[in-house]
Image 1 (cartoon, rainbow, N blue to C red):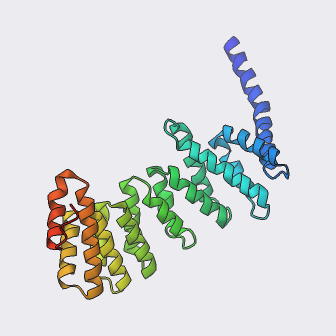
Image 2 (image 1 turned 180 degrees about the vertical axis):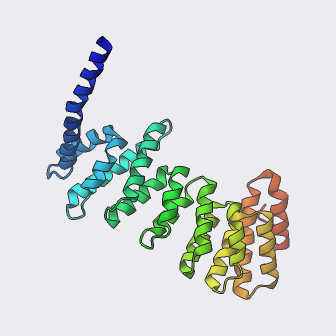
Image 3 (image 1 turned 45 degrees about the vertical axis):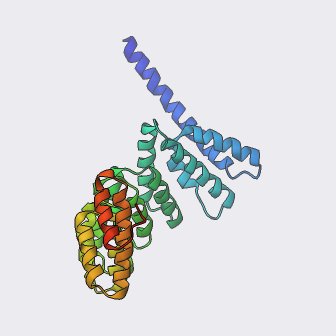
Length: 273
């Protein structure tokens, strides 16, 4: 009986405390727009201490027409996400990631969605990939989603970029996606990049050549040598640069120095190692 009574008292207390806490947060967020700098800083510090649980409220308060409040709300959200990405703050990171994904999937304004995507690039994990993959279909936000996916250490991120590349028609977007795959240096993205070597658009072909140099595996290097031997002048020059990049990538591993040396020797560049 006593246990039941205590539970009821606790639940009743939550009923009164939660609205009070929420109102307190709203009040402090409002202070971020105060003309008094000391009030803004005090509110900022208090809100940062609250952590990721208030990110949703912060984004709701962001209004470009209210410059001071908008700036300080963004700074506060940025600091909270930064703290959530610190070593040992895994629960906060999970909470912050969830909050940002909710913003990205909401009907908020373009500026706030872009800001959420940029913040997600700092703490995003494999859990964010499905949402970001959907955003790749949005011409307004797809570039920021692409940049965010580049930074997520998951093969699923590579797979989402590969899928987008296979369905891409705009040459500029193809180049952007190929560049993303090259930046990831994940050979899981090699196949569509090799296919892009035969694209009708010259810029797409050049981007593919460059990306293969960053992947730097055996099949990529082999494809680059073929272009170096038989490609047109611009493609041969791009292949030369890509092969040098591949050699530099390989030389970082003692086990692959021999492969790097073969590239340098064939290009008659001996001073690299």
